[in-house]
Length: 178
Image (spheres, rainbow, N blue to C red):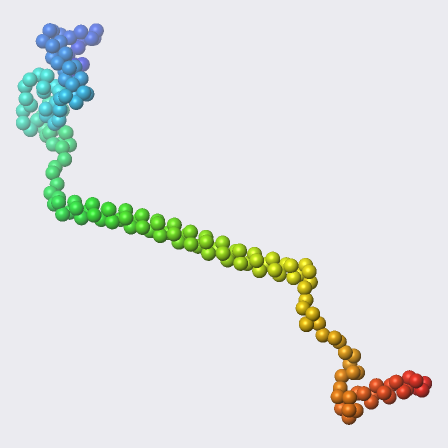
């Protein structure tokens, strides 16, 4: 801004002293970019180039009532104890460890569940195959098949409690021509 204020419309400077100061400002800018010069607050490039320090409590070019703390936004030092800083860092580390432990346990649990599900699936598939074979082959144990007897043959054969007499009477009737 200071450099632009000292130039005319064609870009020439008003005098040789101004030109020397502009060259100083350019060199200081270059050194600032390279990291050789440190400028902060009221020790800026213009103050270094002009060689006169700022009046305390004022900022050049922004008005007489603006203080350096408001313009440069210099943060105030906070009073934090080492214990508080340590406590915060320990909490952060514990939270990170907790997350890693939970993630590891969740991965183990998922692996165990997948293994258990695979076992169950294999057992059920085996059972289904056996049932399917039984249905296809119609495997039925021979012991389960019982010989069927006619209703008339059931009885004691003594004659008193059985229908044997009825059977004999029926046969006699059929043979004699009832």
